[in-house]
Amino acid sequence: MVKISNEVLRRIVFTNLGVKDDDVIVGPKVGEDAAIIRISDKYLAMHTDPITGAIERIGWFAINIVANDIAVRGIRPRWFLLTLLLPTDTNEDGIRKIMTDVNTALMELGGSLVGGHTEYAPGLDRVIASTTAIGVGDRYITTSDAQVGDLILVTKYVAMEGTAILASDFTNELIRRGVPKDVLDRAKDLIWNLSVVKEALELADVANAMHDPTEGGLLQGLLEIAEASGVRLRINVDGIPILPETRYLFNTLGLDPLKSLSSGMLVATIPRSVVNAVDYKLRRLGINYSIIGEVVKGEPGVDLVKDGEVLGNVSGFIEDEVMKLWHEKY
Image: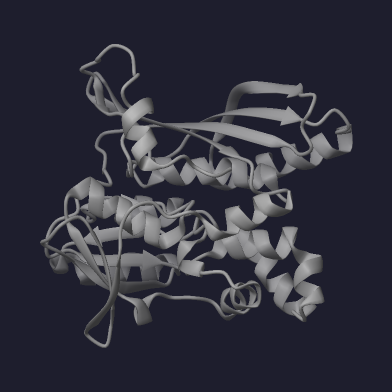
């Protein structure tokens, strides 16, 4: 899957949304992770996403990717609907493998699969899974409430999702280029770290804004926070955490990890006054984090800084490098 540009979204998609409904608190908007609908004194969070850029463990991806988008609203994902479109040669063992991974992900999240659709679709050469996640809460967080002066925090490591996909779906190419099997095995195992549900729910009472950087990677996620909030982000590039396996695979293929699928890394903007509380919360969960920058006044965008000097700035729309490579192959 390669997303259409934000400009096309604004010009064509967002201008055809049906009737205005006052109970829709957060509707379609660039950078916002899930819709928020007022139901009496509660808030319903809903999000849907297809998985088209992965082959291995697609059932695991299908549940966890959408669960993240509900959790960064500060709301626990509870109910899921799954649509599976299957190539006509998919046998029962193939379906069982997908659904076993779906069930494992649901059990870990405490979620329930409540509906969906499954069919054989002529013309497909791989499975496409599209999932909707739903949750209900007393309050919510948006991508668009980052405040000037906030610190920018990320959990875990950049491009873990992209690393796992490269290791799983490009194994032969990476081996041909000399990547050792043990590196590939560690990279594949990163798929089990793609959930941000625990840390997102833990930070829901202290963060001003939270976001789940997926396609386009960390830089696209940061841009979406900046644009949605009307602020500028100043990022210390040396502070961005990256695993050795990620660096190895991305350097081997000539890709930029900052522009690649990054599910598993939560981005949050937090007031400076809550740093100690955040440290306690995340250490209690055993989740590593890094402070990579701050929110400043200025035109919406992202400045990349090294040793106090601005290396460059990021704006516009970022095409995901792993997705681009994946579609060139498949």
